[in-house]
Length: 322
Image (cartoon, rainbow, N blue to C red; front, side):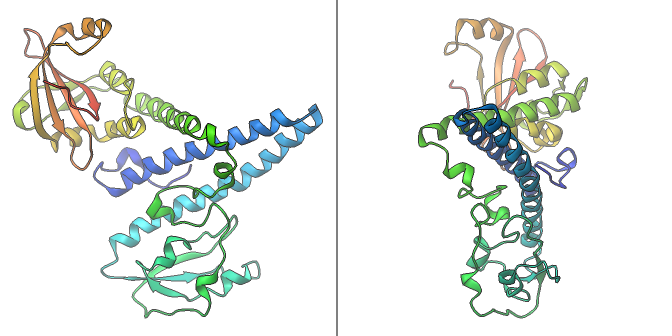
C-alpha cells in the first residue's frame, strides 16, 4: 500500500488519518485473499512444473496489482481534497492522458463534467482498470454530460469510488469473489491481524524509548502522566476491535489525550477479570475513562495504590463496569 499521507505528522482528527488506516487495513485484506487464492492453486498443481507456473504468474500479477493499488490510493487521497474544496469547485472534470494508448471508451469521457455528488462517480472514479491513467480535475466549469457516458464499462475491482469506500479494490475483485464462502470470515480475521502486526511494529519502533508527557483535562487535570516505552508495548499488545487504528493514535497521543473528555471513573476491584489479570491489576486502585474526540474509543487511565502516580493503561472500545 502506497500513500503520500505522512501518518506520523497527520492530526488524528484529520480525515486523512482514518483514510490512511482504512487503506492500510484494506491492503492487508487484499494481500490475504490474494495469498489464499495463490495457495489454493498451488495445492491443486499436480507437479513441480505446474507449481512454478503458478508462482511465475502471481509474480507477474503482483507488478500490475501494485500499480492498481498505488493509483487507487492516490484517487482516494484526491477525493478527500475534492470534498474539502467542494464549496468553491463543486464539479469534477474527466481528463485522459491524451495519447494513442488511451482506451476508446475512456477517450469518449474526456471533458465530461459532473457535480461531485453525482451518482456516476460512485462507480466510475478513475482509474477504471489496471494501467488507466485518467484522472479527475476539480472545477467550477459548467456541467457537461457526454452521450452514453453512463454505459461506460468498468472492470471488476474498479467499480467503486476509492475515496468514498476507502478501499484499494472493490468487493467485486476476483480474489474476493473466488474465495470459498466458508473461508471468508477466517481470511478477514487473518487480514485484520496482519494489519495489526505491521502497525504495532512500526509504532513501537517509532516511539521506542519515548517518554511523552500527557496532560488530560477534567478529573485528571494537573496530574503528571508519562507514557513510557513499556506503556506503549502494553497498550499495543492488547486486543481491540480495530487494533491497527488504536496503535496509530499513539502517533498523536498528546493531542488525543488533551482533547479527550472525561466520562467515568471508579474503584479498581478486578472482580470481573481472570486470576492472572487480577494479579497484574493488584497495583492499581482507581480507573478513569476519557472519550476520544471523533472516535468510538476510550482512554483508560489507572492510578497506582498509595501513590500519586497515574498511567495510560489502555486505549479501548469498551468501558469497564463499575
